[in-house]
Every structure is written in C-alpha cells, then in structure tokens.
Picture 1: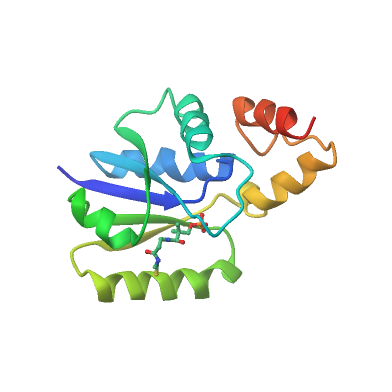
Picture 2: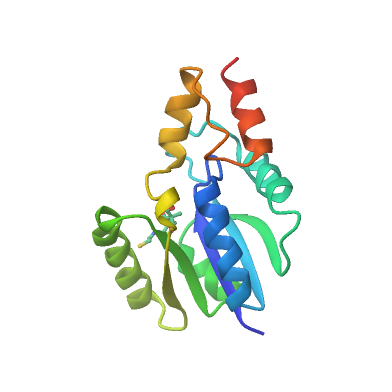
Amino acid sequence: MKVAVFPGSFDPITLGHIDILIRAVQIFDKVIVAVLHNVHKNPLFTVDERISLIEEATKQLPNMAVDSFQGLLVDYVKKHHAMAIIRGLRETGDFQNELNMAQMNHTLYTGAQTIFLPTQPKFSFVSSSLVKEVAKHGGDIFDFVPQVVGNALREKYR
Ligand code: PNS
C-alpha cells in the first residue's frame, strides 16, 4: 500500500491545493492531508475548521483521509508508514524553500521521498494568504477556493 502525506497549513484549502490532491490520489493508494497544528502562527481558521472544510471540499475524492499533526513532519510520516511527502510548486519562487525543506526532511528520514507536483498555471498565483487578503476586503474569491471555503471566508469577514 503506497501512502503519501500532503502536509500544509491549509488556512484555508484553495483550488490549487485541490488540484494537487486530485493528481496525488491517482498516483498513491492513499493520500493523507495533514494539517499543521502550529501554535506560533495566528491562523484564521482553527484546525478543526480547516479539517472540516477540507473534508467537505474533497467529498468526491477517493483514497484520501484528513488529519492534523504537531511537531516534525517526518515523525508523522514515519508513524503512518508513508513513502512520500507531496508538495505543490506554484512558481520558481517556491522552489528554494521547498528544496531546502525536502533536503532537510530527507536528511532526517530517508524512508520517504518528497514529490513535487507543479500547480496548473491557472492557479499559480493562488495562495491561502492572498485569498484571505481579497476576502477580507470583500473581493470575490469563488474562482480560487471551493464553494464551502468561499462561504466560510465570507462568514469570517462579515
Ligand atoms: O502550507 P505550508 O505552511 O507551506 O506548509 C508548511 C509545512 C507544514 C509543510 C512545514 O512547515 C512543516 O512540515 N512543518 C512541520 C515542522 C517540520 O517538520 N519542520 C521541518 C521541515 S524541514
């Protein structure tokens, strides 16, 4: 059974993330979306809210689960016997940091490989932070996030 972990903050999940996920579930037997529980960040959505938004937005996708994690990603990956860490690459600016993370993770644990999947060009500028910025000022974000997330963002900023 080939298990992959797709880690991130997902505050909130965007259509760019979903696009990566749709492709990842075709490659692996199971993909676990792992939401980082980061006490140092100040997220808009709680971990539970992020998890239920992801669950709602991915209802139609097979072979996946949604979970949260704290601490080192590689510890989570090891515990779940995953062979891969999935990360999406939007543009070249993402690459340096992502490469460093992949190399660090591989140094800490050689039992899993980081797999980069390129985002479709139509989502290359879409990030959770930009979407929040637009939503905060009343802009239309429904082209960038699943409907359920768009509604939740509207509710948060009402
Ligand atoms: O969506 P993000 O915020 O870009 O995701 C970053 C994430 C969660 C993948 C990264 O911060 C992470 O793995 N954090 C867990 C702590 C850890 O393992 N750090 C070392 C990674 S080199």
